[in-house]
Image (cartoon, rainbow, N blue to C red):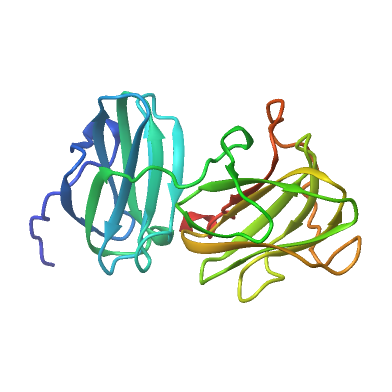
Length: 264
């Protein structure tokens, strides 16, 4: 029998023992099978947009909590390689981050980075949707759990609309009418893993929601479609989106599908 003293855990495994860090830090860490590393940090200003992610060859998963320990966001693979990447707008206060290996089996080294994120390129609600026009090609970037909303107008009754994305990001599209009621949903009828919604629409204002895996995409809206039903896969997301204010236009919202059960 060999008895030897184990190395101390580099970071605490609970809220109470979390390692204090600051925005702007890059913090090294080591995960063993079943290990969890907790970090504590503070945000000084309401409306701060924070980017938290790991780098390295270790398949790391991250969960963000508020100061009371309530879960705010989680991600598994939106970063580089198999790393997580969480972007979230936060108010002033204390927060915690939990880092662990996928399925609690992954082990290895990682670097945790906390930094201020760039402003969101497109609004994530109907009220803050980006106004676009038929014929536009609009670039976008999706962060983890991000949603991009777009607003547009159809000029005449019986207009054949084609709305789709291009690029390597796995996108999901939902089409809403002026009142925010669901019209169509598609997730993979386009090129690769892109959505492609086609519908015959009457004149008016509409919204499109775009979501999906983290990464960049191009949104294209053009005249053209198949029939009144279109080719979109209506996968059963009936309901009403957030009702837009008076005078709002039709918008496109992009959202991200759930991750691989966060590899718990």
